[in-house]
Length: 114
Image 1 (tube, one colour):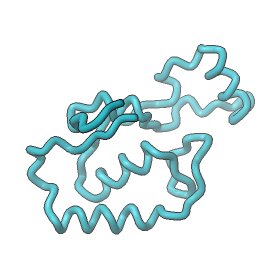
Image 2 (spheres, rainbow, N blue to C red; image 1 turned 180 degrees about the vertical axis):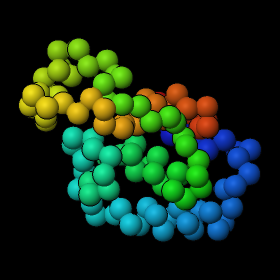
Image 3 (spheres, rainbow, N blue to C red; image 1 turned 90 degrees about the vertical axis):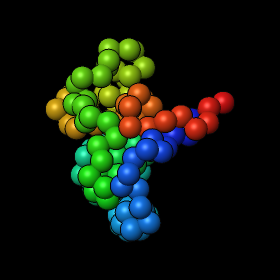
Image 4 (cartoon, one colour; image 1 turned 30 degrees about the horizontal axis):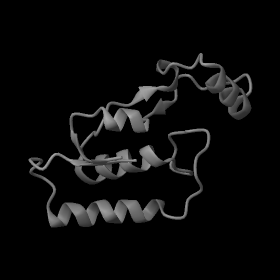
């Protein structure tokens, strides 16, 4: 498990900004988990929610969005999951942000790891 937070020097994390971020997060509560990692707001996956709350609430891009096709997709388990989820139509150009992208972000600092 890893816990991260915005760098403590980030000057825009005010009470008003936190309220705005909470408002944005509430808009997404109750949505189904997005198992195909689409970028629409109809469903939401974990790192997408975190990214969108910070971006829409503060204008802070926690990590650069990547295209699904930019990830290493040739591992047999990954290839199997992709086929299960997408069949022959893998959306390689779909914007994606992964937990690993957030962990590698220079905008976030490690708070806890076990």
